[in-house]
Every structure is written in structure tokens, then in C-alpha cells.
Length: 346
Image (spheres, one colour):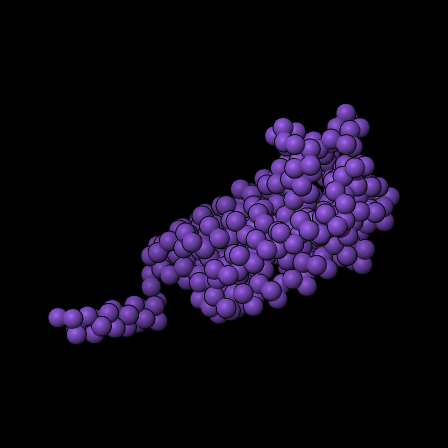
């Protein structure tokens, strides 16, 4: 099952790797002490694609919230980088606690630390989760009060997400809401409020993006999902998946264009973010083989580049944008306040 968690990016094990349940497979992880490797595996730190896909919407929101002719806050970008690694790991732990029974039935997940013999116990996983959430709270401490409340408001979505595959064929859509809450957080961190007319279209675009790439990912597990009774958009769309994915991808690109209009972004945004995202989505659709897990996985992982393309365009679109009248007035008022504050010192 794809999850907050798997976002993931777990490789599809072949041959001997599946026959070594007591071993934590994964390159550099093998060089760690076994117990440490199990915790690294539980947090998916050996599969960074999930942290990328959680972080990028936060970066999108931060870039969109940046003032014209300025660059995004390095402080916020750094905080969201650390926070995404920690909270993605927490999401993985929550998911694996929910899914212990299902993971043992799926070839790709039956070697997870909570499933293997002599692996991590439930109490140990709960303690690890507490440490992960504490790291996330440390990030929140550095943000304004509005953003703290906004971030906490997403927690019910996070906790309930692993259940969605049992209740609906649209867990990928729910994941889109979880991951792209970060767009709102990125904007709120900069402004201490939300302007949904501006940030709303970008959030909607991100949700469609997640629905797009996670449906591709879901096709890599569709045979096991049927056996385990797990629901997904891959099973819902079936043979019509590419047609539906084309519509979803078109909606993503369309809402990106709407974002540029609503935010008065400069022309580089349309060239890089809108056209670049459209080209990348088209490439994925025309080259993916939805019946081959490795093809699905490679396209899924490639979405970190799509996210960076959109982020780059947002940065350029803001940097080259003309300040509107309100921005110019605010800047002038700030200058006047600075001048008056300096007068007593003269």
C-alpha cells in the first residue's frame, strides 16, 4: 500500500532480497548496525523521494508568498527541508503501525521492520514516533502562531490517511490533501494569514499532481492490492487509467496557469513552471508502462524533478514580477517609518 509513508519510493525487490526477511536491504543501510538500520528503514530515510514530495509543496507556498523582486526565505526553506524529513518519517511509522497485517501479504512490504521476525516492536515504534513528532514540533516552534495552528489542523488528515485504502478507492486523493497542505503552510509562514484566491489554485494543482503520480505508483502494486483487498485509484480507473491521468495532468497544468494569473507572476513562471510541468506530465504519460512495476516506479520517482521545475518557475515569476500598488505603498510606508525612527538620532 502506498502511503504517507511510502511516498514513498520503495524499490521493488527482486529475487534474493525478498528471501532475506531478517536483513534490512538498501545499499548504505546494510553498513549500519542492524537495529539502527531497522529504524532507518522504518522512517524510509533510505528512500528520500517521499521527503522530496512532502517538502516541495511547502517550498511552492513559500516561493509564491515571496514579495516581488525578492528571493524565498532561506530560513523557511531550511525549516521545511528538515521538517519534511522528520514528518515524512513519522507518517511512515504511523502507516506501518496501521498496516502490519496488510504488509505481511504484499511481496514488496513483507520485509518491513514491523513485520520481520526480530524486528521493531509496537512499543518501540511508538517511542520512535514520539521522537519524530518532537522534531516536527521543534520546526513549528520557529513559525508564527497562525502557521502553528494551521499545521496542527492537518493532523487528522495524516492520522486517518492509512485507513482510506480500506474505505475508498481514492486514498491517493486523500494523500494529495495531506501532502499539499504544505502549500498553505508555506504561504502562512510568510504572511501569517491565507489569501485563498492566490494560494488556493496552487494548492489544488498540488493535489492533482499527487493524485497523478501516486496513481502511477499504485499500478506497481495493483496485483497484490487485489489479493489483500486494498483499494486504490489504479484499480478504480483500470484500463482507462491513462485517459484519466491525462485529464488529471491537464487539470494540474491548468491550475498552475491560474495561479500565475491570480498572483500576477512574471512571464518566466509560465515558461518554466506551466510549460515545463506540461512537458514533464506528457513525457510520463507517453513513456510509462502501467503493467510494469519498474516503469511505474521510475516515473513516480521522476516527479521530484517536476516539483523542482514548478518551484524554479515560481521563484523566477516572483523575482521578475512588478510590485503592485499595495506592495509599492507598503514598501513606501516602511521607508517613511524608518526615516522617522532615525530622526531623533540626528
